[in-house]
Amino acid sequence: MSKSLQTKHRATKEQRGHYLLRLFMAGNGLNSQKALANLRNLCEEHLNGHCTIETVDVVKDFQAAVRDNILVTPALILVSPRPRVMILGNLSDSPKVLAALRLSGRKS
Amino acid sequence: MHGKSRAIPKVPTQITGLDEILEGGLPQGRTSLACGGPGSGKTVLGLEFLCRGAMAGDPGVFVTFEERAEAVRMNAMSMGWDLAALEKARKIAIVEARLSGDEVLSGDFDIQGLLTIVGGHATRIRARRVVMDALDVLLRVYGDLQRERNELSRLHNWLIDRGLTSVLSVKSHRDGGDGSQYEFLDFMADCVIRLDHRVLGQVATRRLRVIKYRGSGFGTNEYPYVISERGIVLFPLTHSELTHKPLGAKISSGLAGLDAMLEGGFRRSSCILIAGSSGTGKTTLACAYIRAACRRGEKVLCLNFEESKEALISGMLSAGIDLRPSVRARKLLVQTSLPESMGSDGHLIRAMEAIDSFKPDHLILDAMSACTRMGSEQAAFDYLMRLVAVVKERGITCIMTNQSLAGNYEELSGIGFSSVVDAVIQLRFVDAGQEIGRQILVIKSRGSAHSNRREPFYITDQGIEFPNNLRPPSARAGTANSKDGGI
Image 1 (tube, rainbow over the protein chains, first blue to last red):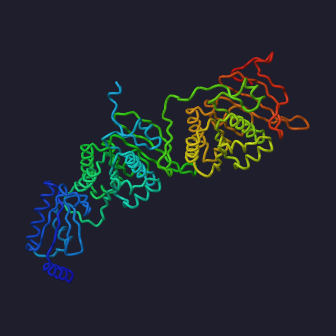
Image 2: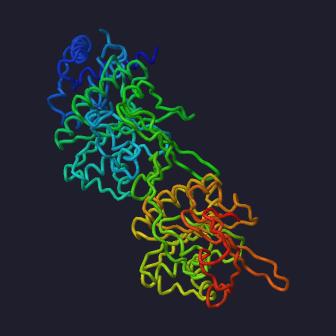
Image 3: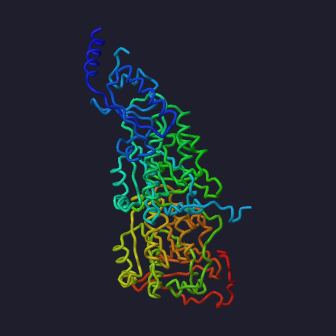
């Protein structure tokens, strides 16, 4: 009981912060489109829009992929708040994505 | 049917010996696979392919999934390849494609990012070669064979679409299955090379085998290789036909008496065996030959497994043979080593390097019998057969001494060796009442008449002396010439 309370408490705190998310996509690939759609939903439902989504098309900008060592796409980096997290895939498994973004336990 | 028009284009690897096995090199614009266990040299093979290409002006991208770029640079430097300089010259790009391991996986993904990075670098330096080292490490992220397969297929197609000649290295089964752990990769690749690292007779040995080569012939044996300070070195005996030089003109054995028994001397480019028990004068006989060759201005390489150069030279002084002028004139090079100091592959490399740089007309090996101490009878046989093959290809005259106790011919000719031996000289002790005498016999001298008599000889402080006034057997009445030594 106390654990879930704690989680809730932390999530509430982080809600105040603004989320900066960088999504690496590969052109108009199906998985990339899915990832973007999933990420937009997630922002609306869990962050009330308190987030900025940067998209990078690695096909157009290979140096960006080099900079962040993006080997697979789609890939999402939580730039802030720290610590930085990297999630690989089309983000279809939302409980896992929420946990990784430290948003678990937040009401949708 | 297999005319030149059908030959597939190839890219030479310039790895010593490998192109002979691959009949020219790796398939151009196609994918090759190098599989092997840890320490088998997969990385070195890829690295060498790339570096030798880059140094010859053919740029390439090295993708490392396991090691850090800095470790790759150091590894290359230990073999004399300056990656940093090649990177600066835009001849090589290193891509460190390592996942940190704490990424969270959610849903489907693909390796488009990697392809983009590799493609970007390839475009930047105009690469035509790509090496992907430890590809299996990246594939692990999928944890699903079907997905791994899809991604490999995508990678393979991408490489081919771009016309890149590529080498992918993956770990092979620990229990030594034939191909890589990704069987489908074996089917996909046009050329599959397996590297094997095993211990035989307490000596580490490495073997390379080409498992398949689509559209091309290749050497099908297992080939020993070593990783030396100049990269991978292989010794293929790939030619099914013997390319030995024909035996040449007669040359003096250095001893008038023996020349008479041989009807003029040994044949040039022949392989001569001097057999006898310890102390019968095998090395002395060989040194008389060395001195004569050096006096003619020819070069002699002496591989000695029995004693040091100093011991050899001072020992010969007491038998009236002074080799010091030959050494000073750089006509004689003595290379000594303990047979146990390395495996037969290592010894072969050392001998090959000396042959390549010194370019001798004659090679002396003292003694064959010591070679079994390189590990095993088989190791000695491999070493000697390969050495003789090289020597015969280059027309170098070769004398090997072999210590044998009994007089039977099988033992004299040494470990199943008789077919490559052109002449056999046997030395032995004879009990002559109050003293022990020595006798010499020509058992065989291919392509030449020879005496079939045992002749006494002495080793004095003036050298080897024959008490009988020997004349060639053909000049002697009543002695039938025998072409093939009837004893």
